[in-house]
Length: 512
Image (cartoon, rainbow, N blue to C red; front, side):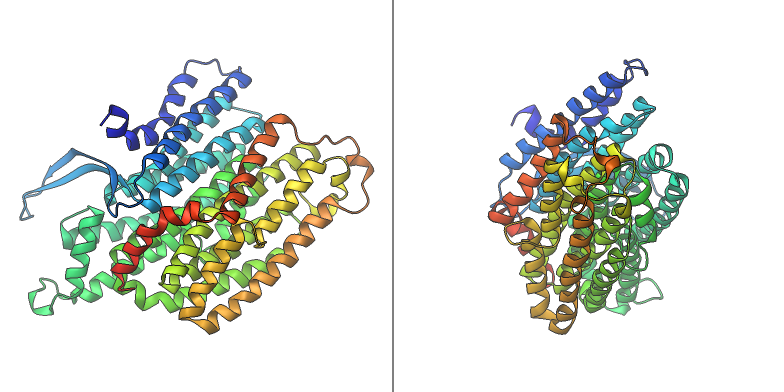
């Protein structure tokens, strides 16, 4: 194998650091040059991710492109093995390779959207590249130590990107983000430490075996006072809480609403498109993968919480006057669909959940990019202040309507496939819960059409008569994101074939 193939995952994960080195040599006043450099640098992980996707063998059930290097060894006299060995372990399967490509695509297009950033460009893009490293790393990590390090690396840059470059209440939004995610991360760390204490391993594939053995272990062979099944369940609940904050699951969602409203659109593209998906990825990779029996015990509760997310988000989205708040509550609602698919614990449901993760990543990125374009011209995102924009911005408004149609699940677009599969899976498991959840689909059409039609159609206001339609650099992200949305909607096999074996492996863990 070539050097690139041997170290492909590391090259993808850490190539954004090259941008930091290059930017360090550029004078801070040269905004245009720094923005151009940032966009070019994001093309490196994008190109490598496309190569990874093309070279990935979707008929292989195991991890691929694995990297393992002895990294940290700590002497632990109290342990039987006398030392704690932490390796640098990376690997990808069908699930993670799809999310890596999504991260690379959204990252590049978000860099394009960052052209609207008006101050402290060098610091902004340095934090932007660090955020990219964290996102890539989470999807590649094969042990809990690396998973946690990369997970934390997404929180710190995000805090500053909100606090410095956000809107009026940016500091409050950043602090709320940090408090919620900090608590979630602390709980996750406690769970990881407890898991290591009872298994002596941080390797995720090894944990899948060890946790299964401990769950079935008799109390007589257990060195602790609490039964092994109870210990494992408590650890699982702690991880469930941590990922519930990140997804987010009601009632742990309020921080996300503030971020969507106050953060700059380019950062919300990443937050809504990728960072929320870390919660879903954790639920699947660690929840179902490592704790299948415990996950089955709470699946019905997760299904109910999914319906609550759907209906709560849809109802509140309907009464919002701010386009950013409409999409923020819409994200809460659509993450409920992810929960429904995961809770179904069957092939259709899990496939639908992953489809929704990727589909929503594309759709929400597109819609927030368009809101950024509108805000750049009007300096408002209030529906009541807008109206008649289609007269002067026909392309932007046309894509906005297309994105809304995808978000409400129009056939021929990715949103339809993901929602159909998620509800199909849940109807086979919890039909009553699924039937209630379908009401959210109807409400989605109502609030999205209300927001889009009131913004783009109706009498044109005089103050918007000077507005220009999409410029060249704005057309590219819209066309690419909409193209992916239609591709998945028209030809879902491009994604389902990628995920097939990974889904089968997860279902085998729960006996499905």
